[in-house]
Amino acid sequence: MEINNDLVNTTLVPIDFSATSLLALDQAASMVHTLNENNKITLLHIIEGGNFDTITDSSQIENADHHDTLAIEGALNRLQKIVENREKGKIEYSFVIASGKAYKKIAEIAEEVKADIVVMGTHGSSGIQAFAGSNASKVIQIAPCPVVVIKQGPLNKGCKNIVLPLDLTQETRQKVNFAVKFAEHYGSTVHILSMTENDEFLAQRLENNLAQVESYLNERGIPTTVNTLNASGGNFVKQTMAWAEGKNADLIIIMSQQDRELSEYIFGSYSQQIVNRSKIPVMAVNPRPELEGILDSPSGSKFQI
Image 1 (cartoon, rainbow, N blue to C red):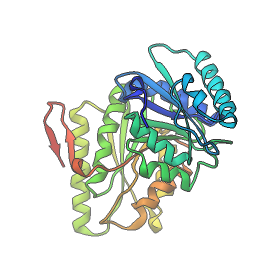
Image 2 (image 1 turned 120 degrees about the vertical axis):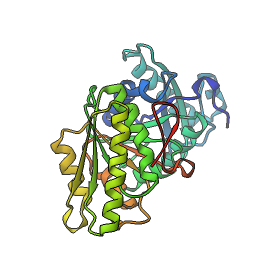
Image 3 (image 1 turned 30 degrees about the vertical axis):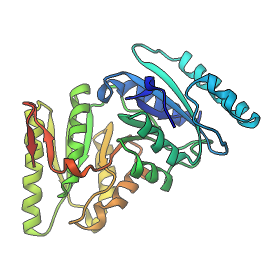
């Protein structure tokens, strides 16, 4: 499959025409300048019962069979009306209509268009049906780029408070650079969050890591707080949610897979539960082995933690 080169390097927004997917589009429009220098948004609609090659231009519709043609034309018209009714500013909108399993197709198209980020709603009545739960986790786990999940409402335009849960793994540090990009763009405060560790050796390691990340953020001029929760019974998910809501957080940034050293509370199930339960928008970042423990410093050198 070839994707129109005009779509390359974009913010990808799956649209099933539900209210939540349109909220995700609002969010994408608000944050497109943060990670995507090209200011492009690609709207992706998936027809799960269809059987046709990916459509990136209306001239390609004639290649589909009659049944699919009607569905494609209807979807394309609705997407065009959505864009026509929006304040475009400097944003360039494009469309992709595809057939197949929703979560697989989202990841596939994100790879094809070299998406900087996927922004999507978690509940839809069609297209991305019952997206909350295991389907959300599937998309996040296989997507080639970070995924922002919107459940009830978009990020506040100010995005004043970002919650950044950290553990002892190398991978978890990778999301720090995303926190930096958002904080610098929105003027946010980053709230580093972790759980108390009873083992003295691990507790010292955790304290050192939190201090290094705090120092790194301060070096970038980003207001930062460091907070350690005593999550009784290991229920760090509930503690995280309560703490974030108490801070009026606008965004929680997590890794999609974490922890090979600590208890299971912050393993993959932690990420899944945060995505499924959070009323606050969540960004899930897939770990990249080549970036373990490495952050970009303001001077352009690498900051090893």
